[in-house]
View 1: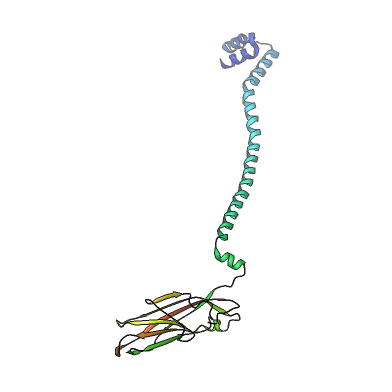
View 2 (view 1 turned 180 degrees about the vertical axis):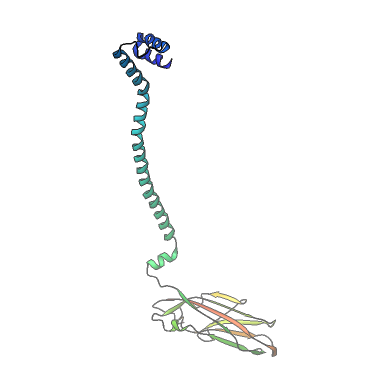
Length: 230
């Protein structure tokens, strides 16, 4: 019935002849050759034409879509890279050390020393322990200038000990409140000079057992042309 209906759409009054031929098995035998060829040709073109058209449209659309997707990919990747570079630049711009190195600022360094005091056998005495900078600081070509100092001490006793941190002798000092200190009091002074921890042991008389105090000094410095002299 489907073919006979399409044949009717294509040929109008000839539909009855096509249907009659299909029903009686005479289609293609009793009809004129030219009419049979024309009918089959028209039926085929009528049936397949929409499918062929859709196929051509789909085929022609695929390269355009692929090309468009490729262009979008090429545009998207550089755009993402540009955004990442911008974000990274903003982050680096906010980091202080980036500006310091970019401007040629001096690079900070440090020296540190840990020592144990000699045996303290008697209370009421001051015992000074000298902390000297390492050799590379002393031999430094540029003048190293103190930018920060940390000091701490510890001992295993109930004896009360007060401590001072001093620069280049035992006259220029700062008192530790507790058993450690971070200070900028010595900023700008020569980092090649020794620092001292001066321990004052409370009480009088002999200490038994003797007292040993472990101290640590860390000096941060930069290389600068000018120094504080006092």
